[in-house]
Length: 430
Ligand code: UGA
Image (spheres, rainbow, N blue to C red):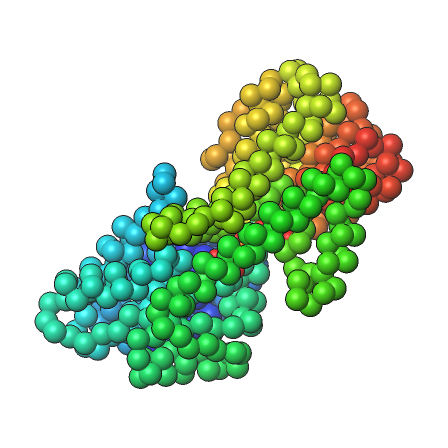
């Protein structure tokens, strides 16, 4: 099938290359010429395991190309995916300006029946908005359909998630267009659900908000565990055996970050409010999450005698989670700002996000290894649960430190192990 994907961010780029890998002819469009040039030189604008190799292979076999020329791409494609950014406004409302811009352009370039598929995460009602925008801006009465096909991939495992999704959701206005999308996804042989457009849009928001709720829930349980002398990791494990609850997303820590959950929960709350419905559950999820870092920093101050001025703190991990270089809504940014505000010096290390970090953080000394970040430090803080941190030689780490103090924001060590190496060790909910 001839497919066009507009937007080469995480979702667009991964979607495009996976469709190419399944044998389709894919044109990826981005208005950012420098990004297109990078991709045409096999340089990936994001870090994602397996992505570069897959792009290279499919480019060599002429199944994928990158361009800024939306007009030609639309003319040559039956299915056009919209995968552009949907940033939040100050109110939490999703800004649909890029979606609108692309919809207008597609409308202006369509020459035959086109299936326009919304893959960006958008509030319910956006499909209808895109349909009206295209209707208004198309040149002649060329037929088209607008479909909602939300994406559920996770950064860090984006390719695997796209090729082996747990479900495909297709929100289609009629059977004919639903069948065309089914055909595109058929080679994956995974469960597919066909719904109306609005329900598909809601499935995406409800899924992300539910996962965010699990995280805020377990973090609240962690707070109680800290008071009561219980261990939240044991509690989560015991809960997780119940298949109605499930083991996933019960990892207590510094809360959810990244480009999706914080933004999507705010957007869903905004939509709920707009409909005049009760937002209490989302209010609690958001408030709990927003208190994770302030609470953690209060703990650090308390344990370090409330005086951080003149202290050096080593930060292990800057990315918002492991296996990505993405630092959007990363807890490291918030923690480092609070430490600097309190007069501490910060030395930081991350296995892959150092280049991104340099553009976002000021006054931070960047170390080449975790051991270097700990060198001369009064304490280290684990912010991201990278695997390489789980296997650190704690004796070596402690040797270089002024004091063996560790605040583990992701519970990557067993308390006994850290204590065995002489660390004053503080973790979450234990
Ligand atoms: C999330 C969803 O998991 C994807 O299904 C969805 O497609 C994507 O958003 C999106 O809407 O595009 P992602 O943001 O890549 O994916 O990251 P997650 O792995 O879900 O983690 C989100 C945040 O929650 C991270 O900060 C992570 O550290 C935190 N988290 C996750 C916890 O604190 N505890 C957990 O148990 C799990």
